[in-house]
Length: 230
Image (cartoon, rainbow, N blue to C red; front, side, top):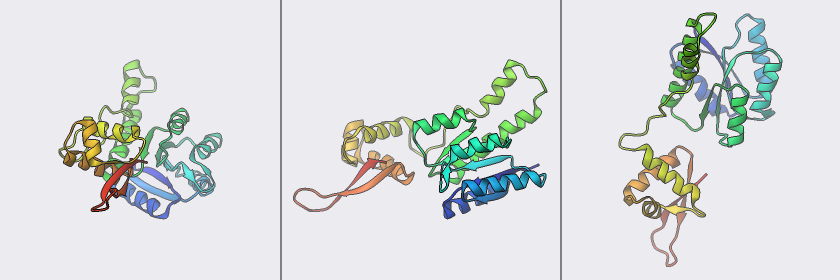
């Protein structure tokens, strides 16, 4: 039986994309789309009353009528036991910590590719499969395997030729800088070539983690692209 998924997302284009993504992952079926906390409550209540409860909620944290964690509190109080994956641009460590405390099983940061989205849903599907196959009473090793399926050792794959170590170095250079940096300046900080630094900076910008800018020299001339951490 397919996992029934409710997408809770206020941005129209993002909601449409996430709904389409759900339909492309085998074993998952779209139960509906809610554009606000109020709509989400109505959709979950209606699904439960119809005997087809939602299994999984893809929850944005920034909703027009409240925070996603506030919605989650209300859902639990109302007896909705569906699992929740946060799908959000909220990078605040406090929000991440509170999401974990409130039982969010996975946390997916925007923006992301379909491959990353699919990997998260497949990870969740593995967890459900293990849970369904588990006996009524489990031993420690079985508990470890269940929880381990939600905590993979790997991370999202990088484009070919890029390394996690260099990406971390470039990220640190941008985060620690007091002003925007050019590719040449980042290259000097991490001890790499300008071409290498620029490739990683462009990757961060494409992922929405860095902002591009334009810097002009004191004597004019050709402008230079600069980058800053968002």
